[in-house]
Length: 326
Image (cartoon, rainbow, N blue to C red; front, side, top):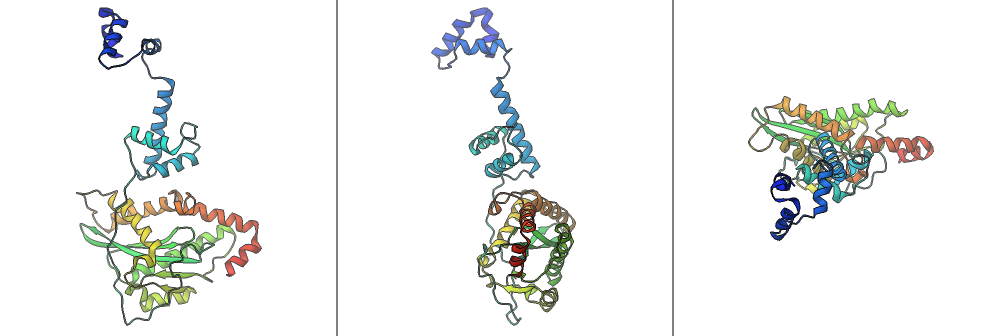
């Protein structure tokens, strides 16, 4: 278009188009005149595409620059579409390519942090990998921890997650992987539930609640076992060194490593110390619970999934009472 506009007075539009077509640069006279009629600006379709690509980029940035095409497509549908139009997943992928963005790629995680204490008494395994069993929040909790290398040395991050909703209820970052690391995460999980239960008009109870972990010495310690007993929570311990036995928690930590530790500090950069890791973890956990879409719970955030459950429970309290008692 620019070439024709530059030389049309010298050679004429039609001769230029004819020569271009002879050399494999195909363009119709009508196309040139259509562009000329609107001042060589973009078409309405091109403008709509550009606005949609910008909105895809905004959604991607809003979600910590992590989402791939599936979750961006779901996020766009939840927000009412792109420029008010519902688009297919392939269209979202094309717009991502236009915007020059892509989702984070999750790597393999094979590090084992579990150091068992053979002589310590262990709870039996009440889960047996049946992760789809829970039908309500606070039926099964799972726990684990991992490490992060920083310039000040290793720091350790522990989590407690609700199996039903995938919500992270408790977490802690410390410089030591002793019992207080996992104990404080459990205490925070209990506090989170007690604080939030009033919002739904019922009192949080640990009746029927199972806490599952691996056989790490932190989870088999006397202090942790006593905390479970006092809280009325049934302990459950899986097989030593078997990631599948605590697969859901392994998945959560894998996401944490990919979406925080690796994504926010790419190769060549290091975390400065505990405070920086703690700040980043707090931000991620809030987003993870309130905004991140989880495929396993119908592509909605954990907090929303729990709210849906409580709304249904309030509509049929007798059914809820029977489920909670179970």
